[in-house]
Image (cartoon, rainbow, N blue to C red):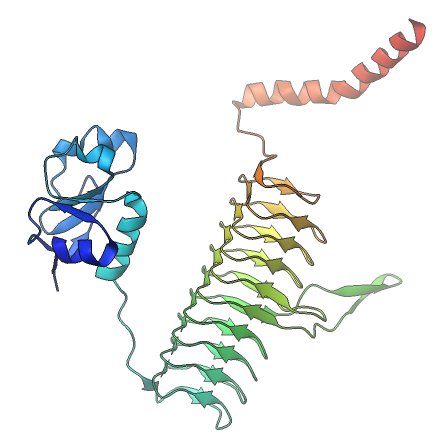
Amino acid sequence: MPVTLAELARRFGAQVRGAGETPISGVADFDLAGPGQITYVSEPSRRRRLDSCRAAAVVVSAADAAAYSGNALIVDRPQLCFARIAAFLHAPPRAAAGVHARAQVDPNARVAATAAIGANTVVEAGAVVGENAELGPGCYVGRGAEIGAGSRLLGHAWIGAACVLGRNCQLQPGVIVGSDGFGYAQDGGRWVKVPQLGRVVIGDDVEIGANSTIDRGALNDTIIGDGVKIDNLVQIAHNVRIGENTAIAACVGIAGSTTIGRRCEIGGQVGVTGHLTIADDVRVLAKSLVGASITEAGTYGSGIHVEPAAQWRRLVVRLRRLEETERRLRELEKKS
């Protein structure tokens, strides 16, 4: 149901300018928003077009509000306020509590009466599913695993034995938590599997994107801190530790026994080699390789930007000549 602009201001700590009784039923992009919808502005290109916006209201900063004559919610951080409004107006529907007739719940599992268990989901013996948790169709919760209150597993998410998922987490389809880590010992020319005996322990308010995998520890646990956000297709190996409120973009690979600090931002397709440490408040740019520990906060990168093919070929030729050029320089230095 629609809510008034004044009600949104009250809920989210904004200042109303204009008609507070304006009904708001949803959010929309700046260029598409119309009657009954609210949008936001924080980019310079859109600030210059504020008066052309047809939304019922706009979330703006105090500085930008002067350039707009329509209904507004004035806040310090428009994008953040807009995100909270969107979550409020478009909250996903919750499944009805209860166990679907086609689910399989072991008699020795503990499932809260307010939890929802979808069709073809399996909950093994000793598992615990907390209050208001929701397991979508085709999910799996292993023996002795724990699902915290309010957490949601969308279709075909998989939680291995003894792993722990905190409160108010969300796992997208295909997430695997608690698969075996990639641990092997060499015996001559063959590999011998090292049993993976640890768990994965995930904190509260964690979100994990579709088809991402988090391996269980070899002996100690793999740890994912509170508030961590993980995109699609991310691989986190055994015994990795990730600090609170770190964000990891798609296609990142993190090798075993690496520790990543708090509030880090890891860009898409970054590779992190094993047994290293990344400090708090580190930002790694997309497609970088982290091959050594990072001990100080800051922004780091190692990727090479795309070039026209002809220019790239010339650069490769020059790189191949560097070793010969260095050899000649050393010979000249010796003679001088």
